[in-house]
Amino acid sequence: MRRIGFQLFLGHLGEGRPTFEQAWVARALGVPITRRNQGRAPSRPPPASVLSVLPTSYLDEATALSASAFAPLSPSYVYICVSGSTLEYRLRFMEWLFQRNFAMRGGTGCNRCVFDEEGKLLCFFMFVTPGIPDPNLGAMVKLGPLSAPFTFGFGTVRRLLEAKGFFEKVENGSL
Image (cartoon, rainbow, N blue to C red):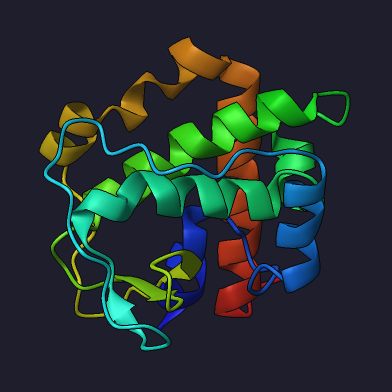
């Protein structure tokens, strides 16, 4: 049961879902949320206003939406990226982190979304049930999360693991 809360954005880290206000602030700050299909065949979005499994061709859009919702205001990510970090740095870090985390869970039905009538992604979240196994070392090597210390520095990774450990203790009731 503890994995459900933690896996919601791998480190949204116990703060609940992103609010409309957080996404609005990100958009107001000019944070781009564009669909970067990266060579995949375009797919049609699921029906409007229906909670659906995210098509893999929308992974980049879900990543950008998620990162833009958390980058401006999330105390956890401000701490992880250091309080003096810029919004641009936090966006880059979270897009990198979320992209790998969401991709590792692709094909499991964990990545959920809702689109509007125009095919625009309105919301995205990751819901990992206890029956879904954790990614193995091969997936981590293939998708790149093990390169985080070399991409963002050992301090950022140390703070990420520290925050992860703290929220796992909170979820287990041992804190």
